[in-house]
Amino acid sequence: MQEEAAQSAIDTFISAFNASDDSYVTALLSQALTSDVILWGPLGRSEGIEAVERFVLDIRRHPAGAGSMVRCSGVDMPDEWARYRWAFTTPDQGPRLAGTDIVHLRRNLIDQIIVFAGDIQPVA
Image: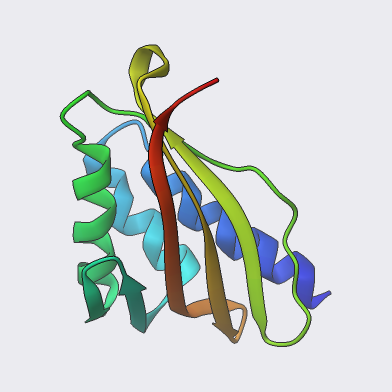
């Protein structure tokens, strides 16, 4: 049951990267994250949905054009922490960024996100 809640929150979070318009990003993040969410990302620690929204919008505005984010693994949840692998690809199979996120859930919403991004490389 807890893995299903984690997968739902994670998939909603990922859908914010793929929203048809920037105006939908906040609504999607609000469905997946607690208001006091903490993001541990490549540039350090930030707090709140607004900080995660800036992170998502920065990725959506990649210089190569809007790309797509996909979850490319199952959700592994040994305790209250869940992990999954993801990939972000820009248009025309441009640069690809892949990594693993680890998230912590509270009341079926993500309250912490730890982003481990890998190398940018072309899609094989």
